[in-house]
Amino acid sequence: MSEAVIPEYTAVIAGKQVPTTRWIDVLDPSNARPFARVARCGAAEVQSAVQAARHTYETVWRFTTPVERSRICHRIADGLRAEREELARLETLDTGKPLGQARVDADIAARYFDFYANAVEALGGDTIQQQPGRLAFTLREPYGVCGHIIPWNYPLQIAARTVAPALAAGNCCVLKPAEDAPLTSLRLADIVEQAGLPPGALNVVPGLGEEAGAALSAHPDVDRLAFTGSREVGEAVMAAAARNIVPVTLELGGKSPHLVLPDFDAARAVPQIVESITEHAGQNCSAGSRLLVHRSVHDELVAALAEEFRSLRIGPGLDDPDLGPLISARQRDRVLGHLADGRRTTEVVVGGGVPRGDLYDEGFYVEPTILDRVTPDHRVFNEEIFGPVLCVSVFDTLDEAVALAEHTTYGLAAGIWTSDVTTAHWLAQRLRAGQVFVNNYSAAGGVELPFGGYRRSGIGVEKGLEALREYTRCKTVAIHAQISS
Image 1 (tube, rainbow, N blue to C red):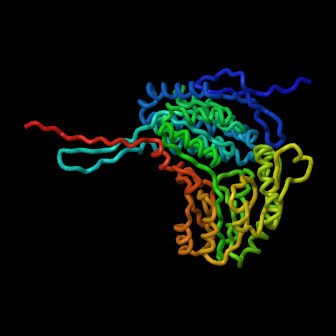
Image 2: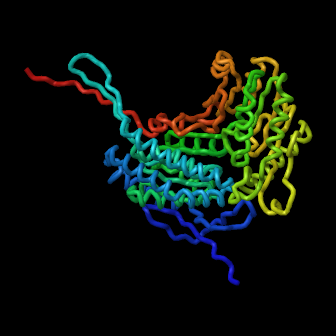
Image 3: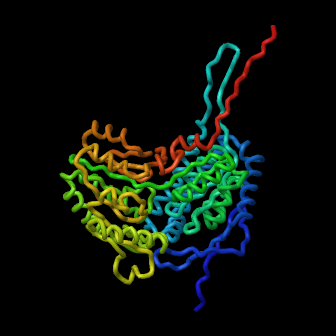
């Protein structure tokens, strides 16, 4: 019997697939086996992609009306919905996430294009009052060519999150997906072409971060950059952008806390706390990875969470379990290293290692874990683990709760669980986080909710109307009427 042919995916530049002789194997995280190969692009392909984006911007896209851009974005959304099952399957094979979660990602990707299709028709400037005979107003204009470097954990969602407002605002894009999970970004390139987006308006160049990603972030003809990923790589992207005086949006992760007060609603809180740290095996920048709980309800809450953790089904993403594998052996080993530290310094309530059984021998699995009695001097309290690990700490006063929440260098999201509205307002105003959820927790929130980090979690804002403004420049026009008598 002949071996199955592994499909190959190349870069898409100016609407065409680009031949290559360099490849990267894409592994299925559930069994560590290659199931596809993707082009390994470098500086030459990035150069071609930027040139294609510039040409399309200068000749076509910048002159396309907001109404027509809106129509095309709506058709892209329709195309994403039509391809929902195939996109979800590719996303699951790429990332290991449960199939049901991948379907939600496809739905949300479509929502981004619909949202910005609607919003761009209302985008406009302001008039500024001056003395009689003078008129001043502002215009919102696209930057031109935007570079987008996205991560492997939510590739389809984040591609849509960053590309949709850029295209709607009138920019052309070069998208560099993560080498671990590039396939849905390449499928997106096909969908936008079928929707009528001009060739060159969206170019996709897969490859290694240190090659394609570095070339894109340092390219002198890129007018704006967006990056989601690690703080270390974000610093390098920002330094490269600074050399070209290019604005950049950075989303660099978090160590987001839940603050649970004695009057919390357990029926509502427990499932959302569990979901916030186990969705996509905890590989979520705004995962609720720290649980700060009042001492009086600590035992009750931890027992309820442990019961939920023990009931979670773990397995290959295509089987649609509660929890799939991590993305790679590298990421699994990183999480296991944190768990080894946790076993030495904290109390392991549940989990703490690799699940047992033949099913888990080849993939990159880690048990959902609760570490209790975690204090601010512990490594697991401060560092982003990016795995299904919930770190529990206790407090006695609200001031202590805020101090614990603010102890890390991150500030992406936070959850507050209390029935006291006054206390909730007080806490929300004191937490340095881009998103604060009260009696709910939705990692990264909805499409309409602006999303950006405080402190080391990043700069700039994605999502909501704020993102559309971020992808436009403000130009002021001042007119002095010359009236002859």
